[in-house]
Amino acid sequence: MIDILAQSGEIVNLGRVGENQARRVVFDVADWITEYPSATIALLNEPPGANDAYPVPNVTVDGDSVYWTIESADVPVYGCGKCELIATQDEVIVKSEIYGTVTQRALDDTGEAPEPWESWQQVFSAMVQEANDVNAETRRILEQIDELVYVDGNTVIVNG
Image 1 (cartoon, rainbow, N blue to C red):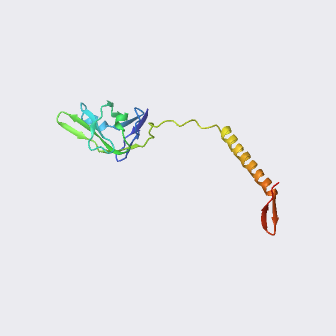
Image 2: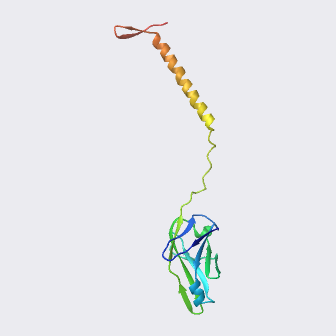
Image 3: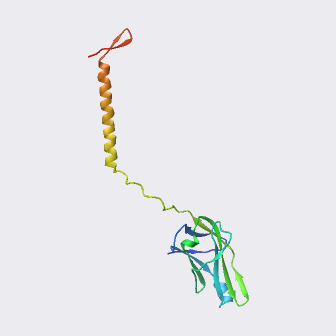
């Protein structure tokens, strides 16, 4: 799994559309843990093009860090989104900065596989055969030209 450290003021790269559990975003919450040791920490994610954020279910807190394991539901389309941490302890609610996120495009795998390509030997053999065919046609034309007789600048066809 690839760990991505969320840095203040920087865009968080969530990976590619459809990736599942390949990346994990790490947020440093040491200050929150010190100030609010029994706080519950949640993460809201707003994917690209969405109008609403949702609470991310796959978030864990370990020591001074919050870990968000990116699942395919978190990266459904490419583009720019947002995420935000929220800590609650009793009546206190603390929110992080809103981090910009980016999900990169990925190729769609819904198409059908093409027929296997011919080996290079088959392609080369076909090209050689085509050249031989052209050469044979050229010889046939030259033989016909040999049968022509030119009289006073005019061409006269002579039957052999």
